Length: 397
Image (cartoon, rainbow, N blue to C red; front, side, top):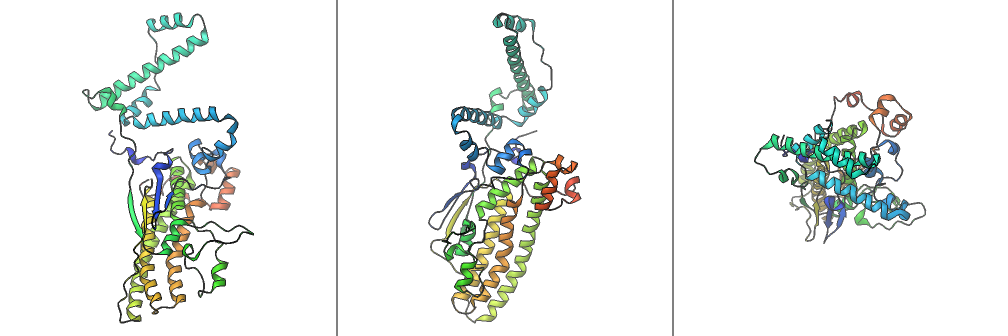
């Protein structure tokens, strides 16, 4: 086994810097990992610890507030856990496999070791037991190093087995030309009852009827999941899939189908738009462009998030073409809005889809516990192909 495929497993506890994103008309910065899920998620008590931290934020935001009185102990514990994770990440796959193998073996101590422990313990059975466990851990570590070295090359220095590069990041840069696409970058939280809407027209995709101001204001309370929210949410779903949540697997399959359907529809929509625009004027109106586009740097950890960004580019390109004809008077606002809704509605639905997922353990699904009843009510009934494993996501995670 080599390390060439080591990045197939995402880093669960990557720092915000690993998943930060910046977007700007001059410059807008955001972090896909900073977007939080609901503070109370059904099934969170049954999720594995690291997954629960991702889903509910209990590992960072809530923990720091709840344990303010014991912050020093919590901080030191988190520091030790982080150091252990970083150490594990630097080990080669051969060493990790060897450690897993050696962990199952019995490590008898030599008579010399037993004598040294007896003398050092000073008659304390508890101290002797602790020192015996420490010595066995040392022997297992040495055995794992020897086994891992034998798997690669006897000439490889031992220290190279713990010098694996940390997880590499894929970075991409993309530009968006229209304010409608920029609205998708930011997203929009729902306006609470009694709160006055303050979001301007630039942050409101064209989902109004006829362009009347009353219709425009009435729709400002609707929630829109932005690009970074969607990227953060789909990463949590991907982690849930890797941790064995059948619903996470199903949601990834559904997300991939939505992506495929959107791309298939784009070909038809683009052909119809081009034919329609050609009949509206003898003037060839160039697509809109701006001197100061929104420049977005993407450091996502799962491929689905990059797909979201690319689909938003397709949306941006269509809006550029159509809005140019609207602004030059060759198309009415109602016609422009209809096209925007045709492209934007499935995209808004897709961006919101991963946020609907929450953790449900596989045992709960198989045993039909009360938790699965709540999950079916909120997320639907799992297809049999998901439970049996016949249907799985195809995109790289």
